[in-house]
Length: 245
Image 1 (tube, rainbow, N blue to C red):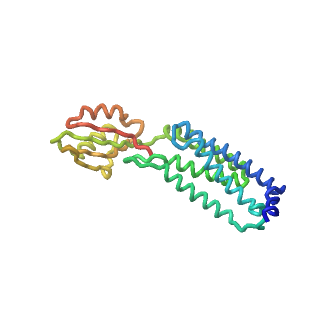
Image 2: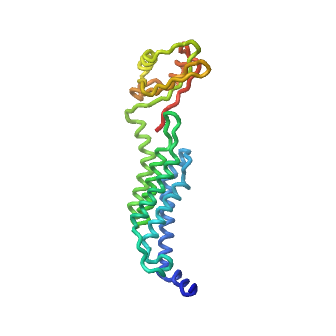
Image 3: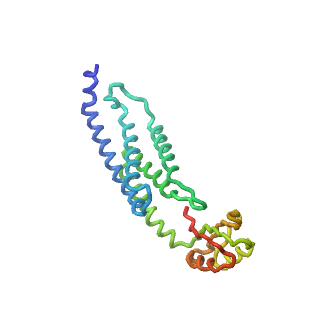
């Protein structure tokens, strides 16, 4: 029985299919590494290896489905597999991976760009595995350009920056939210009142709030804002963290 089945795995059609799938894997790996280099250059945890593996795996699965009549050497005949179900499985699996790179720290949400680009590079792999090589190359190039050039463009366009401010007041000092909002307004910031949380630590009031720069170019820089806060009456300690989403 084994001697009768083994020759099927070395037939001309099966060897050709293996060669084409291998070329798809190499091409998808290169495209994934192209997109992942931008993340690696910026020091992100997911870099060229992660992106290359995701793109290559997506392409491999998609390409293998295209040769389903040759599965198991073609000994089982035509396998009834819906290619769209494989694509759906790839997208679902990448969704779990993307969820793992998104981290929330206070008002900061990190990893959204990485998660979105990982999901996109999986689509690049699917397109490459399906044989749309030019479209996959354009897709990967657009992903890399979007994460590099569009970031610079975003900084040049008018926008608003958000600061996560945590302030610890001295014992016995009674801060006033309206007064703080007025002071922030003069410095070019608007306090988001819904973000204010108040706690007590060692008999000291601790306020945490978000302040949005009305105009990113006119708002006081975090360094100058920190210098003014250090001279504020009733201030014990504070921290200023730019919010990144």
